[in-house]
Image (cartoon, rainbow, N blue to C red; front, side, top):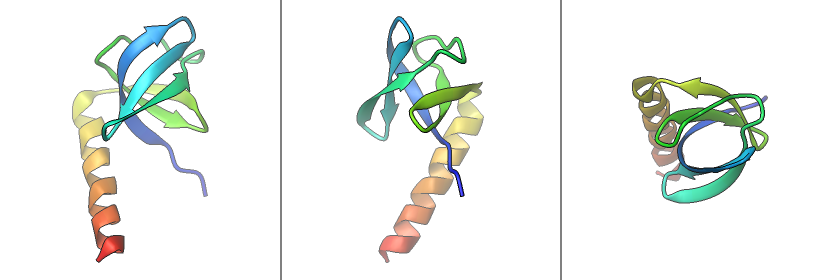
Amino acid sequence: MCIAIPGRVVAIDGQTAQVDFKGNNVPVNIGLVEPKVGQYVLVHAGCAIEVMEKEKAEEIIELFTDLEEEFES
């Protein structure tokens, strides 16, 4: 099973973006998409595969947070 995770772009340098995942900044290849700083991207295997609407990204982040809390309890 493959899972893609949304994150917010905080900086861009060429084909690499720094993407914020719940406070963790991670380098992500953006060669397949053209995001702008502040936009959300869907990331799989270190590559951004889609630029997302903020509302949809936040909805998915909330779902993952709920799942994480469920597994921790």
